[in-house]
Length: 326
Image 1 (cartoon, rainbow, N blue to C red):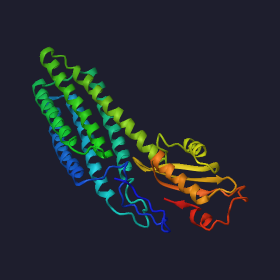
Image 2 (cartoon, rainbow, N blue to C red):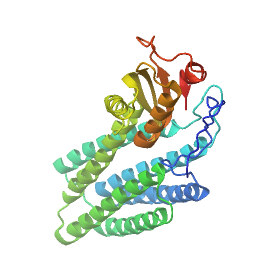
Image 3 (cartoon, helix red, strand yellow):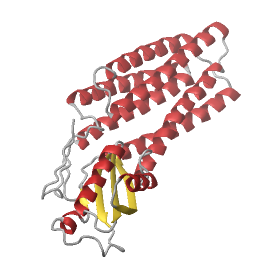
Image 4 (cartoon, one colour):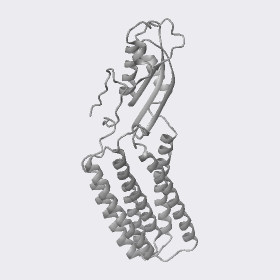
């Protein structure tokens, strides 16, 4: 969906209830998918946890732990959809967009806790192997695999562009691997009686969880620490503007940060050359920030240091575009 900007006299009056081409719209279909998937995953997670306790399988418990994190991720994604629809107000000018980042951080920390528990139990069981009921383990793991396949198919129908839907799909794919591993372990125990395969496999599943936990933690902390997107660093933006906009002598005070995944903002000051058209200069700089760097809200100010010879008598120049905001 094209994103229209008003360059008229009220350009500073900015609304936040619009869609952006780089952030797919949150649809009722997305919300419904996420909510239904949450109930399916959460329901089976309980079944798998009980199955793990009854069969004595740590691999099943590890997979249930993985499914719990999926359920949390889906629940938080749904809450982020709901909160994301709430309008911005005077206290929260960006609305509740950052809720999904906070949700991601909580999810990542939960994952680390689950991994710690699984590794602790696995070490204990490798020292003292426990009996495992391979038949029950196999049945529960097969049902788990079928549930994950269904949820994966359900989530990937139609629009899958939204960051929360993508995240949910990745979680479920990791879960599917866990279920397949538990099936393999059950078969090995059934035919050979070698029970250490169960804790060994649970360690493998926990490493899968750890990988997604680390990635999630890194991304959420980067956004919470006001980090720039990978392809829109401050130095790169400054160099690009100086090279591509005639009339810019220097670019400084560049700050780039993200409100949430896929929504970046930037503020900077440009020092114009003598006689430069300030309105044309700031407008062009803003257009480049939006089109080249996917900056949703560029704010370009004028650095007046050493610009006494600029054409300050232009009627529209300084008044309209100092701290001109989009």
